[in-house]
Image 1 (spheres, rainbow, N blue to C red):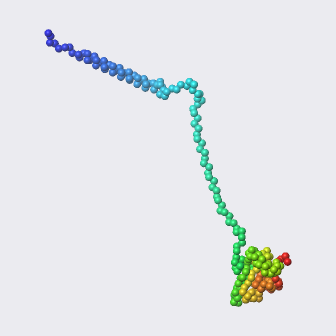
Image 2 (cartoon, rainbow, N blue to C red):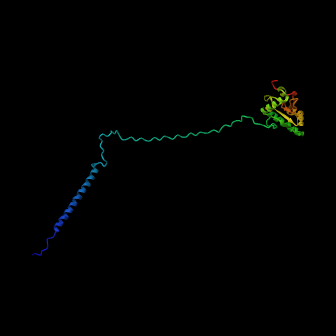
Image 3 (cartoon, one colour):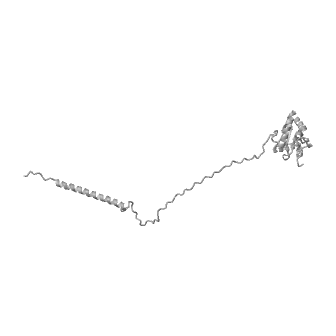
Length: 228
């Protein structure tokens, strides 16, 4: 019996190690070759297209690149500025009303002369009052209707009250004066101011019948319509 130790496995282990190392080298070499091939292909345009190739069989013909249409912006219309005109002032359809005892409703000529006559009467201690100045046509007609009932006929009534279209009161060219002292003063001195008594039967009725400073015309016996 021999006591020599068994042979060592050093040789077999080395062979396996070399085989593993060799295989790894081959893998590295192949990988390097593949990477190098890809880089060369990209450099010379030999690399495959990265995007997929779509088959053109039965595909519609394309004449050119798609036309891109620009969106046309419609200009916003500028709002027209409308100016609103203020409404026109409408003139009153009816004449202003005046109190019958007021001098305001009289014609300018009679008003001016009567104001001077009033001032002259005041200087003599007399106060002239207007008992009836300008009247409305409606009131004049009412007075005429009352006169017809009082005197019994239209003809007799018009000696005292004229119809509206003939009345100097409606036109603002006549006044009835009071009291009695004022009527007497104006009857004597009215010619100085161009204001005269017109009718014999109406001592209160005065009109602007003459030029101031000249004699008054003869009085009429009573009032009468123009058509008489």
